[in-house]
Amino acid sequence: MRPSQNRSRRPGPGTADIRSDDLEGSRGKYAQADQDASIPDKIVEEIRRLYRAGHSLLPIGGNEGKSPLVRYKDRAALPIDAVLHRMLAAGSRAFAVRLPGMLVVDVDADTPEARSYVRKGFGESTVQVRTRRGVHHYYRFSGKAPKNIRLPNIAIDFKAGPNEYVLAAASVRADGVEYIAIGEALCDVRALPEFVDRRPSEIPEAHPASGRASIPKGARNDQLFACAVAYTRTASTYEQLLADLLQMRTIMFDSPEDFSDAEVQKTARSAWGYREGNSLWEGRHSAMMLRRDIMDRVLARPNGCEAWSLYSLLQSNHGHIQGKRFKIASASMQKAGVLPLSRKLIIRARDILIEEGCLFRVGYEGRAVLYLLGWGHKVGGKDGGRV
View 1 (tube, one colour):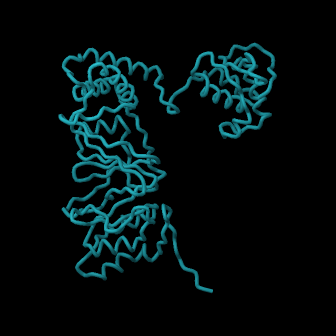
View 2 (cartoon, helix red, strand yellow):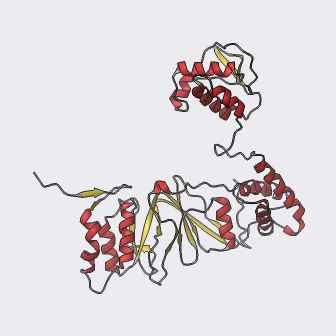
């Protein structure tokens, strides 16, 4: 029988074996391979730390000092000794992080306009890296990256997936530029903030001749309101929202001089009113209204927790449409995993809601009962029917 080998596996796409002696001894091992080439301890330690956190790394070099020294697309992660060996052979002090399960917002130039765009559109990441002129924001993400942004004083690229990469913190390019971590260090992907695109669904394209965005007359009011709703989600004050919208009007509108400040203020007040009224809706990232007195009454009942879970689910799915009639299908709920209760518990929860005036039977569709949500006006009695 062969003696057991001490190997540790790093999670990630195309997982590769990494020997513990590679992690612990690679600095001394490869520094002796070439007396004229060396990798600073700071860089080696950061490479080791990122490998232990589960990241796939690439050695970087080339004429401009920003190109991978190996083929990597659709390939397994490199072992740590291969990354260090290629860096030593090329005399490089730069390495990159591949981006499976991640998205990086690459701000090419760290201008006030670009910072504002990132803050309003996505929220700043807690993990950032300073580049030569800009900054990288790291997020947790799966899916297709958004389109790159080119607006006046705003140049942003989006990079995502295992076939994309960015230079990592502690890297030093051939021109001497060092990439520096800002805030938290990159660790487990699961600890990153999730990327959420809060921008309006319609993003104006830059005009090819002028290089500026162009929102024509006739579309300006609709676009301004869409942006106001999006910006309201991240603005800290009404004054900040108004300043952002005034800047958008100046930069993006055709003939901004004939679109008055008063019109912008009117739109800003309207959007801010929706926020203060807790009425900003965005798919599942939205609020719903549940009354505390109903909660107190329902939770005080035996099986009240199950009844409150059912009521919350029904309000979420149907409560935003006044007068909507619906079925309660226990089998579908169980299959979808939205309410992991038995049919018996769902019936008991339904009966509690009816007794508390939170649910009414209003008719039939075939053999199935149709229900309507109520707001706690007790009528007494139980409801029967198929669920």
